Image 1: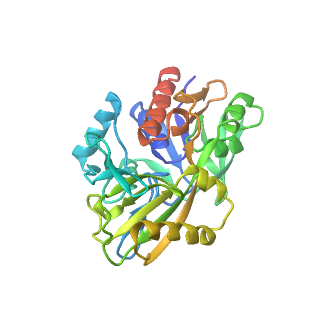
Image 2: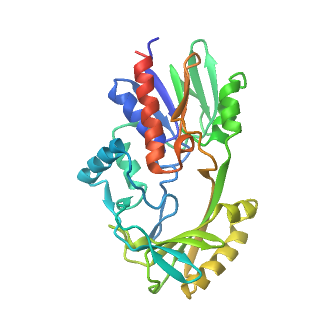
Image 3: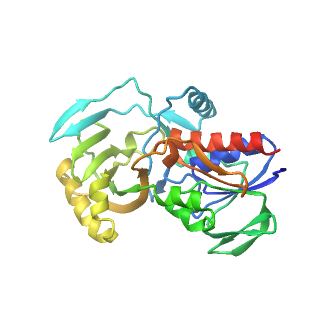
Length: 327
């Protein structure tokens, strides 16, 4: 069957990598994303004079294929190594972690990589896809903002969390429905904080073993960032799940208090964000899902592992499989 026009829902790293593989094979691809920018959880916030990465903090490259891609991004200036001091922190005990592992960040912000990757692609931002339906032999998409879109698609790819995918998948596709509904994603409450003076902690990033945090990092230690002291503190999944129904205001009081105990300084400015689908509890260990007869595919880090490499690999492998199967 000839497949020419493909719609990809989700412009995070899985959706981008899948779209890239399809475009390279001559397919016409349109990406849709509910946000105003690409990147998904590779997210950053820009304030008047300071910035903060409040989603994925960095990424590593372990597989040979992803190492090649990472090196190409380095060459193009999309990313740089983060050479900050990374430690394990437990009850005021600081232990260095493996410094042979290279950690990369987008520059000048984490989401800058995604922005660079979609610069030559067709992307419709601020489009919350809330319905997909078959019309004759094609797929039609509708968004909360625009209603039904004019274009029809030969194949649809969903590069979004499983719960969101399950809400879109037609009920008759029971196999895909069951997989998505039976996949548990873990939440993460995140605090981003600005300080008007330097924090003198002996590290730039720390894996924490003290509630509520699992990770804290000094954003301004990353390359090409503003010099103003800003930090990201991410709560562990157990704590986040306990407070998942709390408001941002209620959670901020708790997170700020815990963060100030670690730093010994009051937060000047702060915001919080709930990543409701931060990471998968148990990966399926399959790179993607593809229903050939209905021409619908699913990719995402939740199928492999909750890393940027996992997301990229999932999307790329789905794109290559579609290129192999469909002319």
